[in-house]
Amino acid sequence: MPRPEGFAYDAYASGTVRITHHGRPATTLHGPRAARFLAEVEGSQHQLVMARWTGNYKRGNERGARDHPRNRR
Image 1: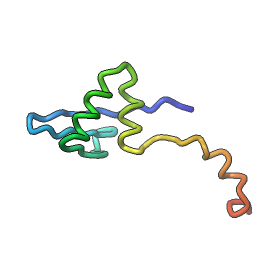
Image 2: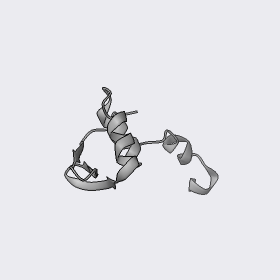
Image 3: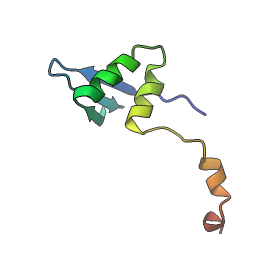
Image 4: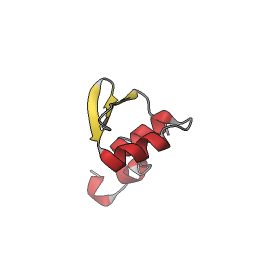
């Protein structure tokens, strides 16, 4: 699975965190969710954490979906 890239985040004094992907807004977190995100992103895998929080990541089922009966032609 390719590693996600292109994610960045900005933390504001109001407690809001804005996550962007290649410069475009992906999600905005407020309050306790923003605090949990900031605590988690302190690790070494920033890109993976941001991809998971935005929901923008591969789930590993793309190859299997190709063989599903409704997708066969």
